[in-house]
Image (cartoon, rainbow, N blue to C red; front, side, top):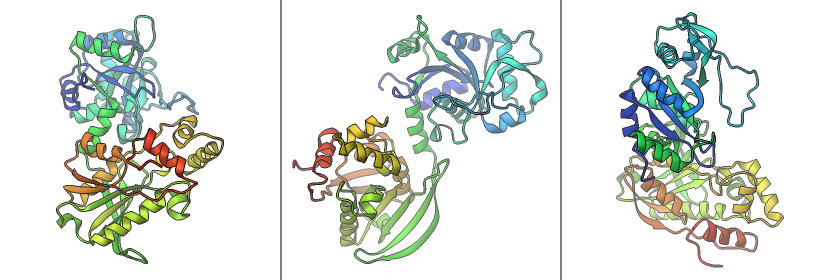
Length: 402
């Protein structure tokens, strides 16, 4: 993303009332939108923005929707990505509401904290979109990105967006969007960047419970339950000794695996890795195991069992996930890294064979350094030999050849 701007540069542009471009994932809508704040909107900016030729919309938070009396346009939302359209409106002072100046007047009034439902007529030409609380950390859409950027710029959490189409009416490609940004001197960022930025700059985890837990084979640990802001997941942490006092304690970021961890399934090496990690941490008398609820590389237990069924028909673990419509590996380690930061760690030795975990520390911008990658290779068996070779050959895990 060397051609992309920084998130801070985009926030500064929003604060200055400028238009920017935001793109989403190529495997999502693969779309770029013009975005600006409603509070700082000008007729000139709105006129430029609607030149994107997509739908002219105004993302906002639920509290604003309630104040303005805006309700969903349908009772049951069946849109593929759940885009939440609300009652279209115009400001009551307009004639038809369609001009750039009238639409500007409407969105600026929407951003006013004293505005009410009576200030607008309906239906109109501005389409409000309901953003989820928590923004892109809850839903990786342009709706949420718009509200996040306005909030981060210190402005009212109401924005304006318009999808960018090419000259033939199709979605503009990444190359076309970059050319538009360069030609008009606009900042351009991705929603992926914004998610990573927020994970680093905002504290999302907090402790909700803590107790001592003696184990049969691995000695005594402190178990800590965390909650994650804006998310339903509740990660668990096992802490041995005082890792915050160690130079670089052993750390394992372990994704949950019901079949491997609890049933000791032979189809994977997860349970073996969990046991090996606890054993080596106990041997050192200091370390941390973060247990992340990311079953089946992020697809969930039921979908993982469906993937197992596909593997029994001949697919490998990557092909099975993809056949179900998922990426090969959907896990995210940002929450785990935040937990390590909350525990006071600055340097760690990471127990893993997965280079993606190392990359998470590098690319996510956390002030936490991996000083050593400690392999944790479980013995193969006839049931997981193909699984391990697929992890090595397709996912880049550092595993010995079978």
